[in-house]
Length: 360
Image (cartoon, rainbow, N blue to C red):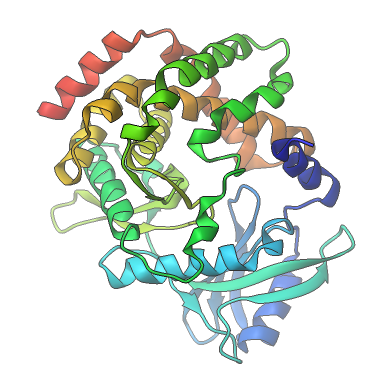
């Protein structure tokens, strides 16, 4: 069976997303970390389960429970956790893993959260204060900083050494941007939706104009998910907001630098009142660290469209099995109409706005 369908079938049949109660989470904290909770509540998530924790010792944490599918690949999660520490050591504001009482950075627990006993990888991470970037005015300077930070993260990750770094190849990972053609197998979720034909056109454009350019793209390790929930900001002494935290490295994969830029632009478009204006400022910040080459520049427009396709299609698919997931509902409402409007703008028009904006 096609790997994409296997993944979605497993997610549906095995109820991959954890659904632990606050009491169960508190019990894990006590048994694994000898922590007693003063406050605990859930945090937004896509397919894992996250809890904010304030312990009685006054420290704040995030308890992260990986879904049952990802928990089958502890090496991947080990590399993700290592990457966060590596970035932190190199000046990037990320979380760090907190060891259990026995010194482990992750623990595999076989538990029942409503779907029968399954194995889940549990980690405790440091808490990063700050607001989601979508909660503050998205100024040109903050967009510039977003692009700059995205480039910095991937440049640092390119220097990361780990014996299992090859696990990030993730050739069948559905969110890997180079895997856009895999969407063809799940486009049925948009039957009757006007966006289905748009996606078919983007996939064909991707095959004909982007895929042949891959030999000219520069390779790297992508953080893979520069969205508003994963970027935290705080005001500086001048009252301007600065990025103070990057969270969630579950989508890390071996890709190309320009993929990260396209992902960042697309996700900033979703939270900006004038989406088309986003690209120039993000691109300017990116190119202050890593100027695009000719091939990367020529494919940026289609790659942003490609990311829109992935988000809209996979969120719609996940809503079939998680109709009450507020995170998915939010994304579905936000992204679809912006994607539709953006898809009506031709490449030359968009590039004129973005590339001119990047020179300012």
